[in-house]
Image 1 (tube, helix red, strand yellow):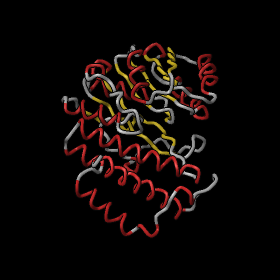
Image 2 (cartoon, one colour):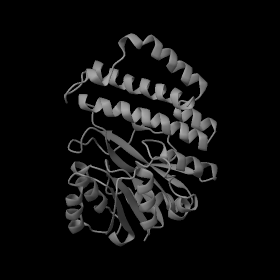
Image 3 (cartoon, helix red, strand yellow):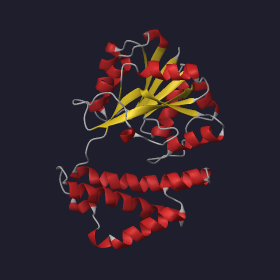
Length: 296
């Protein structure tokens, strides 16, 4: 087996059918790759979607069911079950192009020991897709971003997989990337190993979750910095003194127009001004929680 596509899912039945079909519709021979899916305790129609997908799978399709335990534990379960020489990580809101596996493998043939980072195009839905051409508009500087990244299976196992102490939202893949980077594993970028990444415009009902995730991400940022006290970590998390002081100053001058979740009732489209306010509220929550966690 040359490759494993590994993904975890939680309550994304409305996307999962399309995502799995895209994984099955690859240009490489079906015996050359497999799909390993971890269902992380979904409570929606996910089991039904998986059952239907099993009847359509054109390659080996492995499913692992676990109680809701978070991404790190789910990824490790997927790594343990994988049998491909290369493991390609995606998320359950990612639609791979047909040449996706082929392009990852092509890059690995030229760079056998490397991490291969693929391109992602952010879209608001999977029905109206732009041309499959990556541009710098969708650039991500992440060294190891599990939206679209591959690595030799033996390499990810050698560094111990994902750290399961990352129980809250955020940074578990960055932790893996730092361990691989510090271990001397090089990363290359292949914009032709392309996916569409579902990024819908937030609605009023999403604002509370945005703020909650921002606070969780701040707490895991502090956890990441304790594991990797390095300038790369501080810059990535905004934990360096320059960014912290800058955002403290910004929060001070914006205090009079601060947004709270209570202002975004119901489930409706946000105006541009409201969306800017919601994102500002999430950013403020992140830095507020960061300061609390650093001084806890």
